[in-house]
Length: 310
Length: 318
Image 1 (cartoon, chains in turn cyan, purple):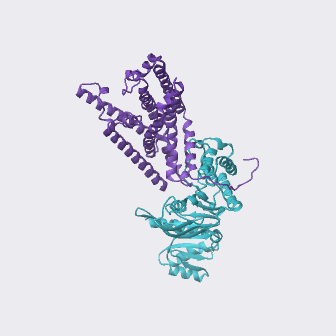
Image 2 (spheres, one colour):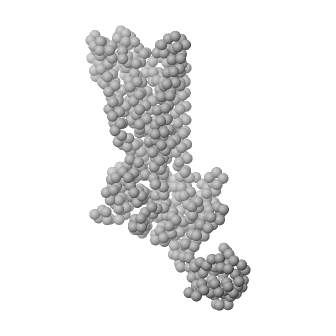
């Protein structure tokens, strides 16, 4: 699969603060989720991709054009839906979308036709004729989405596209994103915290934490159900506990975080954990069933960010 | 829901050049400003002084060519606040004085009614131009398009420039044409052909610094009212300071303030612009005052543009 975004050793400093630290990755065509905790560097990365922020070092390519030289060309071929509540005061929905089409270089009459087409695609209805300032959050999201794709970009960058939407609208938004990728062959980068959104729409996922891209992996691999296991954290020496578990036919693996992963997680395992703890003279601090691996990777990223901020 | 849901349709077509986008920002800004009822009223009012001066031109030309209408002309010209020509000079100079008289009347139109309207009009349309974009965060939408800061600023400046053209240049040029048409003799064209060009030059002198200052104020805040306040404060404070200093000078010399040349034009933006406009219309202005006025306006324009570009640069990266 061809890469739509190629980053080579990107570093970005804001004064002394390092927002991106030696980021290298290749984001394939298709729908990619950009996941990471707050402060991971997602917004900075998006701004770099749009040529709004200059990198301190490294090289970035978007749709084959290198930044910052090709930023005008990139912005003609990229649609951006910001997370912030931004709008043009005094314009109606259709006027705002048309205005952005004109700013992307679409001729006047075409821009109006195109704005209506896209608003139809977004189910904007007659509300498109109302002043944008009177819109609900859902309608503003629709207009922002329509504005991002009015110039028929090859790559769409969506920052929290389902934020503030009710479940029905959220579902429709995800359907639209899916349709754009499948039927129109658009590449889409979705920055979000909502894992079910990623699972519903994405082909691959890029995880960010503390200014680094930790992993870019296909969703098919990440969505594989993790082998059922129970993660146990003990207070006290765990050697005797491990011996008892192994003698009962279970596999025990020490993890980097200091927990023990015990497999297979059958229905009797929880009772047995308490029994082994009693026999070994240790206390059980936590006992957690293993998560879906996407969620697990995300949580690890979050924890990493939290640890780094301490 | 559309009657026929055709899904997503791709678009292919020729894109317009980048500079057309300046026009797009300008026309949208002009249209948005036009929604303001006060602006429409002001544009209507802006043409009334031109009609008044049109009558003055007619009376003057009739007095000059046919010896009639002098009483009416005197009555009108006496009420003009510009003291560079006396009423007797106007009517006794004959055709040799035609050009300065026309220039005098056009400059009076420029400096007084249109000058006041210019301050009010810019105070009405310019403050929201950038500050509203900051408040609604629409700069994120602008700069994610193939649009540079220069194009954005130029588009916004064109909005102010267009309205200033409508209230100052256009009425003055129309007044000139009206004056020519109402003149009994076409020889007036030969005497005054340069005046429309001087009108355009005087307009440029007004438009560039005032637009730059207004946009700088607008870019400094998300609150339009603060930008409006700043704009009016610049003019009012300058005017009051100039008048106070002139009164103090007059008291010291024991004369009327109107009778002594001003040493303080540089404290007032209005009077600084007036010096340059007088010079453009061919009236004698002390060289030092002219240099100071040019330096002040150039400096203010430069600083204002630096402020606007710097602010947009920072926001662009936020």
